[in-house]
Image (cartoon, rainbow, N blue to C red; front, top):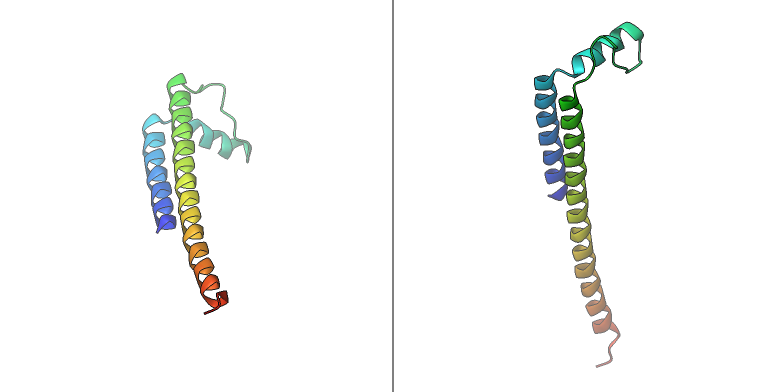
Length: 101
């Protein structure tokens, strides 16, 4: 269940990131330089990246980091609760078997 939620959040973030990048148009110089220069990912000097595009990229990166931290914390809490529940059942079964009548 938690894995499905994490995948859903990741896909939702990818869609949102794609829409923002398509709207800001800062990826066009990257693709153009990639096609002209092979696999180098550098911006051509004739089309500088706007500060707004840089800020939006950094904001998206920080949002992604916060979402990943939240999913990690939830998964960790879920694992701890599951471990506690399984450990208690095993201890009770062990005590029932080893306790003399």
